[in-house]
Image (cartoon, rainbow, N blue to C red; front, top):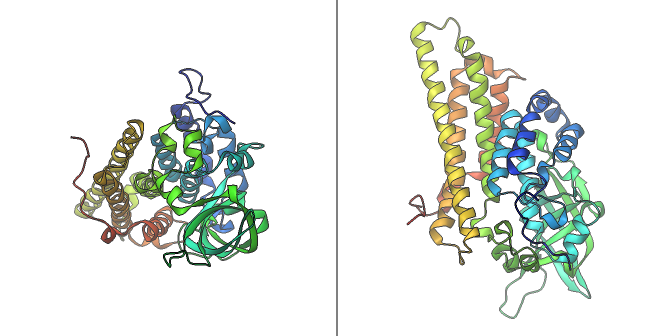
Length: 393
């Protein structure tokens, strides 16, 4: 059995601070390749090569399988900085980087298959769509069509959901999660979108695909983090957190906040040229006020997410089980509200920029489209109760 044990101080190969520094050095190239990513409708190969070379995709991967087991806040900060340079790159990094914690839920056999020969192996996901499966000897036959698999062309597996074709004794159709080999699936080139075009979030299709038992989890195991991988990595809080209060979804929100920060950065550099026609001194003062307000909203959104991630990680380190309801509500609230702050900040700057932002290739136009795409996936404030703020007592 692979033993994943705590890493003593000084033995961790790469710290979270070092990974963040490496990510920051990638920003100039990411800025230059934004348009190329949109044209390709996926990240350029050089971008993924740089991610792998920097090691940032293994930030929260188990040490036993070639990762660094840094805190989740490090992944959050890296996603922010990458999205600040290229929205599509930030989104793909946030998605794929967070999946290491999901894969670590699966059996040791599954983790050996994914990372044993190549610790750089990645998995895309399509967690909301549901395929169909039936039980057979040794595993399952899976069929389905899964959408929004960001970065799938650079991945070996798809983490996907499925619903049983047969009802259980209570008349329900049980659900399971699978690690599906993408090489045995069809990638559907259907990602023609307004925003986040460079994420390559295409659909995948499987027909009569056999999946062995050890590449599957029940929905209960997946959502509560009580699957076999929990015992393998129980020393580390990254793999003890239930899906109900997990920082993973917050990484998507922080990508949107990073995109809004890019809008603030660009507007700050171009502020004197913003406006419509011959902008007078009074109008320029209004424009600067718009910039200040948007910058403040982006800062507030980032602080919200970082605070909540710290609280989630503290709960994991303290082994709080079950996860407090207040923390679950806080994670949901801040994920959605931070995204709305990013959206509001970006929209304000887009309007303040005047007609120049309408042209293709304009940085604000790209930010506007990308942040709206993030918001379409993240903002659902009506789904949650009213969280009261910090869970500290």
